[in-house]
Length: 243
Image (cartoon, rainbow, N blue to C red; front, side):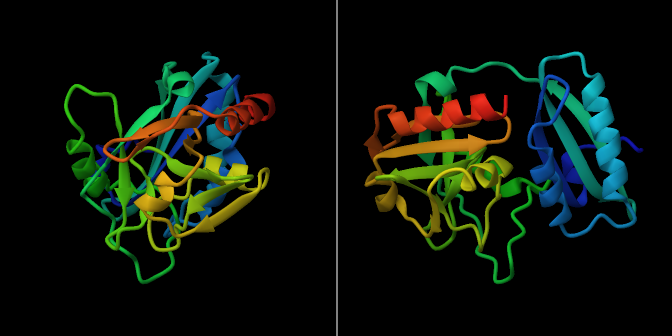
């Protein structure tokens, strides 16, 4: 195993950010499935990577942590490394997240979107630079044709009545593993949405594999929401089932 340099040095680099909880990776099967959808791992064995990762996580002393797996092409060879970061508690799960609509958008792909998270994050970094200084915000990201896709850190969940809707990610965007996990446990649809659709929703939330589900309380310049029972129900489902 070779330690890799900064994220920007990769060609075709893939990133998996995973929650470690009590010596295990609760969503590892879905992380592994997403890795398998990537552009390829060259001569690397996904079975060997999985065995090593699960061994290291089991030996981890912290109750909770973030595992950061990078797989990429370096000097013409495929390499991977794993690092651990502390998982710090935040107030967002209780108090909610405010979203800032970003002008930097994602290009629409004419081919199938694997939904992987790539180490080349230039567009996301440009969008992040748009966020107002001094405020705790996440960025709302659109595609180049004006459809809502995701936030800088999470997938979107939008409730209309009894059904949760998530943006269509066939053209671009990261298909998160928490989104996939929830899709088999709640009433769920995937469809194209714009900002007006979001503003008509009864509840809006974010989800990712590290933080679970976070309520959205405002889209800056558009609408505010109270934190509803639907979001709290999703949070309870994750705590009771996963961690």
